[in-house]
Every structure is written in structure tokens, then in C-alpha cells.
Length: 58
Image 1 (cartoon, one colour):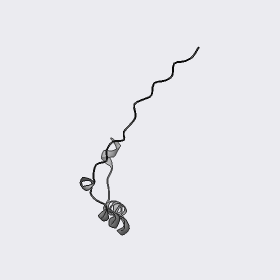
Image 2: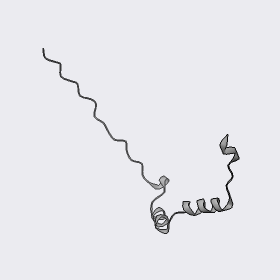
Image 3: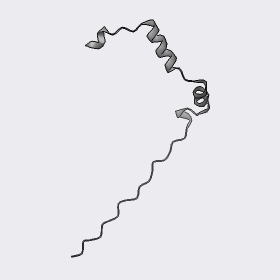
Image 4: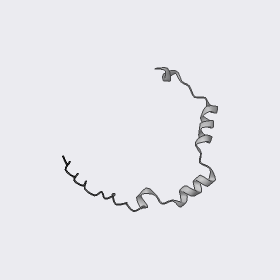
């Protein structure tokens, strides 16, 4: 209920926009990386079946 009365001023909105903007270095790195659709899918890791435990000796 408290959030209904929250008002964001123009200055707050502009600051949030500036903070969320990536740096040029981050943008260049993102441009060089392939998109998720372009990357080959990795095969799931193969797990060996569990080995049977030796019978307890009494």
C-alpha cells in the first residue's frame, strides 16, 4: 500500500536512466559476444550411475 503513494520526480528518473546505461566498454563487449540464439547448445554433463556399496562385513 505504501508504494501507491510513491512519486518519482523527473530528476530521479533521469538519474536512474544514467546509472542503468552501460559504459562504452560494456557495450563493446556485448556487441562482440554472440547472441544466445547463435551459441551452440552444450550437451548436458554425463553422470556415471552410482556404484553399488560393498556389503558391510560382520
